[in-house]
Amino acid sequence: MLDQTKAGTLIELAMAEIRRLAAAAPGVRLPSIRRLAERQRVSKSTIVEAYDRLAAEGAVEARPGSGFFATTRVRPFAPSENTPKLDRAIDPLWIYRQALTPRAGVLHPGCGWLPDSWLPDDIIRRGLRAVARDEGANLSAYSLPQGFWPLREHLARRLVERDLAVDPASILLTDSGSRAIDLVCRFLLQPGDTVLVDDPCYFNFQAMLQAQRARIIGVPYTPHGPDLDHFASLCAEHRPRLYLTTAVLHNPTGATVSVGTAHRLLKLAEQHDLILVEDAIFTDFEARPSPGLAALDGFERVIHLGSFSKTLTAALRCGYVVARADWIEGLTDLALATGIGCSDIAAQTTFRLLTDGSYRRHLEALRPRLAKAMAATSDRLQSLGLTLWTEPEAGMFLWAELPEGLDSATIAMRALERDVVLAPGNIFSVSQNASRFLRFNVAQSGDKRLFDVLGNILGSEAFQPASADFAR
Image (tube, rainbow, N blue to C red):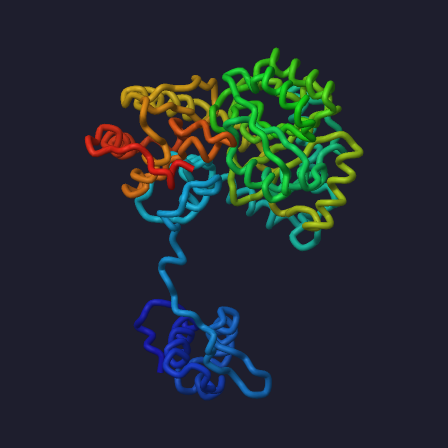
């Protein structure tokens, strides 16, 4: 008989008892549904549900006509499989490995997203409930080939505010900004094609381009955008196919390309028959929109990408591509071939939040909060002896240089031992010339413990230069 004094539903209690029986005799036939229901004094439907759930988990095996058997395929649980390997070499995906594995008490000033407490859970829940209650909402079918039309229509109106004249038919919805980049790279690149990226750049650019077997070359980045002399020289020498960049609120530096640099960049792109891919994921952090690249080009050579993962929620994966009509047609076919469109539930929810005023009010509260965190983090870092590469006008990133002789990878490993995940510079650098830099997410840098740990490491008399293993 089940001990109903223990916490849990009857089904969960029945599952626990079946697990006990299965663990005691792997491969042996388990009691029938009727017999187990009588023994535990519960309904047969309770036992059926318990067996079904355990079969889905792989804890028991259902054999038609023979009943249920204790599986022999269950592997012992290994705690190490559920935690990041702290001693792995630092590479472009090191931050993801550390930051996306939850561990109690760990600080994440090196990650690239807002804290959960800064995101509007209440309005997201309200939006999801509204979609679920809407009899006209699509909760079961595939989306249109280019995605939910009302959202594309609304995005076109929003982009007009940034001087981007866009037709909804020139917008393709995707399941995320990363998915948008992946589609564009698959569509435009062949293995061996050369792609220019900023040095430093968003580390996942490198990982995605490596997956496409592209040849990656870094262009030195300045506070006003890419170094155009280097850019022109690289175009002439290597004939690149694409230039992939975050022109507004650059990741990791926080800089924004100047209008003068953008104009010259577009002229070089035309001269060398180059396509510019602009990742605009952070633009909504700006109170006064910067033009970026697409506004100056009219989508002749620029592909504009965006999403709401950083400003709204990473759980509702909703991104988009804006490009000229012939490219959108090909990208849509590729999206259908590799994923059959995107999530209408995410698109419908995002549309509601964008149109009912919730998103606008959220941004109006978020921007000054980020500005305050930016000022506080800047002061604290400089008090520890770090030098700011530039002072961003908005956004969440600071690119800070360590004192002479110190290596950010070594400091990141020492901080990790103290439950602080930092972002060392070379994970962002194709040339590996950013070993003295760290990227700080100001929204994740409010805990005094971060600066206590950092100060302790920087001031340690036992501090030694980085080893070759961690300097990669």
